Structure formats: structure tokens, C-alpha cells
Image (tube, rainbow, N blue to C red):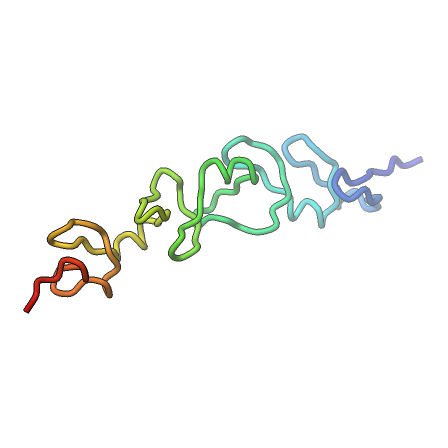
Length: 127
């Protein structure tokens, strides 16, 4: 009598032996489930990848992603926490930070549209 494998993720019976997959010595997984299971680049945990949160090719579980990455308040993209800049109490990624300009007088950061001839609206010299 043939032994039937049950998928660890979806609990369906795996009928064909060639459809059985083991990932990092866990499983068995059916073919469909094996296509969505990935290993966390940071902690090594196996998890279901439903979307990609970062621009590199590495995958992170939710716990590790939230420890390592955050979201840019300007563009909404993910960014390494250690690379995040703070501008007016907002977290800004390096790409967005590069668009900010310093006022020549007060030396605060402003968006380019808020700078005229190198000065913010508060410091712009009169006439």
C-alpha cells in the first residue's frame, strides 16, 4: 500500500510523488504551496510570501521586515531603517532626501518648491 503525503500548509493529499516538495527539511508541501513558501533572509524561518516589500532580491518574514525596514513618508517605498533621514518629524528615504534643499540662512531642509534663490519663505531677503 502506497503511503500518502499530506501538504503541511494546505492539508491536501499529494497524489503524485513528483509533486512532493521538502523545503529546508520541512514539509511535505504540494507543488502549489511550495511555490509561495520562502525562507527569511535574516532569521531563516520559512513563511508564505504574499508580496515583496523591498527592492533587493532577499525575502524577509514580517517580524524581520519590521525590524530592518520602514516606509518612507514621502514616496511610500520601503527603506532600511538605518538609512532613513528625519525631516520635520517624518521619515524620508535617501532618494527622497536628495530632493530636499537647505535654506542658506536658517539651514533647515525644505522641498525645492519652498526654496527661492537658496532661501526659505521665512528667510527670503526683502527686495
